[in-house]
Image (cartoon, rainbow, N blue to C red; front, top):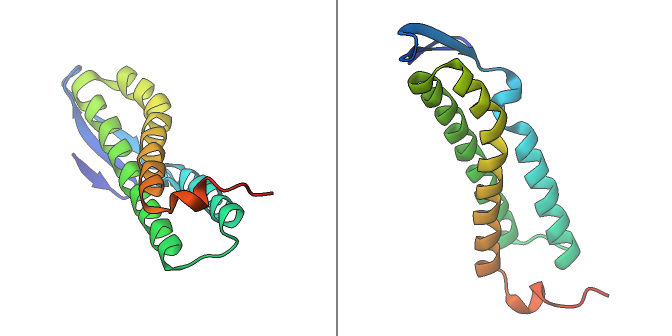
Length: 126
C-alpha cells in the first residue's frame, strides 16, 4: 500500500491490478467521535453534575480509543480490498464502521463501569 495525498493505492489480488481509494474528510471518524463525546458528557453531567480529573482522563481515553478504532476501520477496509476485491471493499466500507463503533463503545462503557463508583452509577437521580 502506498499513498499520494488522500489517495491510497493497493494491489487488488482478485484482479491482479492496482486499485485505489480516496480517504475523504468523512473518513476521519469525526462524526463517531462527536457522538461519543456528546454521550459521555451527557452521562457525566447527568450522574455527577461536574467534571473532575477522572472524568477528563476517561474522556481522553475514549477519544484515543475512537482514533485507533477509526485507524483499524480504515486498515480493515483496505485489507479486504487487497485480498477480496472492490465489491468486498465496498460492502466492508458500508458495514465495518458501525460494527467497530459498537465494539469500542462497549469496551469503553465496560471500563467506565469498572472505574466509576457503583454507588454513584446506581443512584436515583430524582
